[in-house]
Amino acid sequence: MYCECEYGDGRLPLLFIVNPAAHSGEGYALWKQAEAVLQERSIPYEVYFSEKRGDVRQLAKRLTNVSEGAERFLIVLGGDGTLNEAIQGDAAFRTGSTRLYPNRFE
Image 1 (cartoon, rainbow, N blue to C red):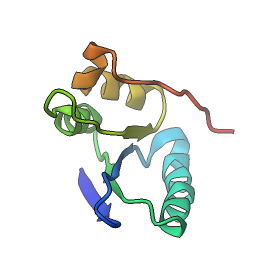
Image 2: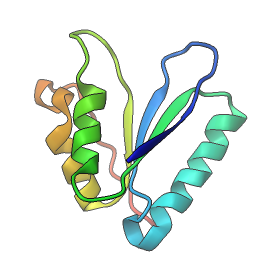
Image 3: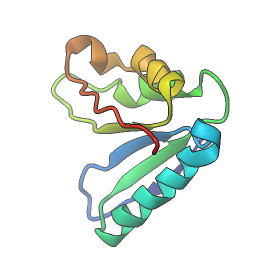
């Protein structure tokens, strides 16, 4: 797992976990579309790519382990397995502060 980070003007970055292999490689293609919009609009972000099973769980745990009241915006791009791992690792999920917005590859 690794991070490509792009910071803007000090605003809190959006956090992305991307499974590039999701849906036969379409996960990476979807990320590239999202990245273009983020860069065009100068939105700060950090992106982490999973490389193997268990990476998403570890990343979600690390990225959501923040002090009470702190906000993190974690966006997960992948399939059912990726989302499942993110939920397992997301500390905020147990407090009810996580929102899920399902989408599918078309």
